[in-house]
Length: 129
Image (cartoon, rainbow, N blue to C red; front, side, top):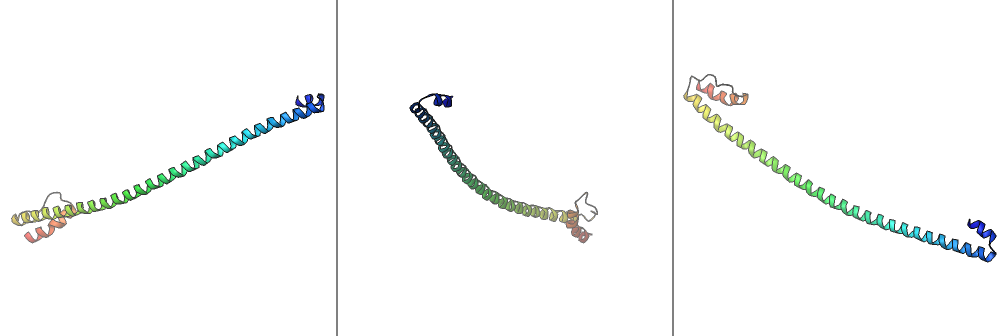
């Protein structure tokens, strides 16, 4: 359409149409450049926000890792204390059962005891008999 108008119009009109077209294209190009600049700024803001989020996540992971190590160490301590307590109680009960076995020489069999209990009590029974 512009070409048809340009061919029918006198040279001054043709120049005016070309200038108007150039202005229109320049304005469109400027709008596109503004949009590109705006999108680049958005992308940079998103990158900065992502980097900030990643730093925050990294710090949180490190904190959780330290807390996990602390809790693991604490679990080992509590487990060791529990085992020591169990051994202490086992020793006290075994001592009492041995004392009972010594006082009652007729005891030949002590129920359904676990293998470790029989081992612990074996010495008391053999010395009592």
